[in-house]
Image (cartoon, rainbow, N blue to C red; front, side):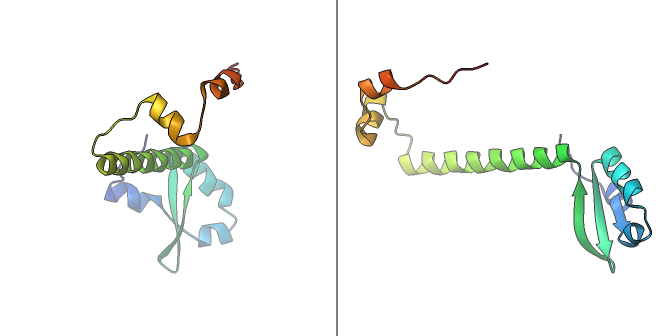
Length: 109
């Protein structure tokens, strides 16, 4: 789960680029696996953030969910709460009952 980072945790997450230059990349990656995140600095300026694949996926899913939520709110405001029947939607998009009957069902394994 994504959590907020305290200042103490942030300071512990800083990794100078020189560690990579000194052959410590494997150690840094082990630290990323342990903590989930490291901030790489070059000339005392953040250059990149290293994340575990799990943390990265978590962030992507969070962004997707926020985007979908914002989209839903926008649509709700635009339509002022109006709902549409299946018949209205089908008519708008030119879908017939025969189209639905002839559609292949996706098999769930």
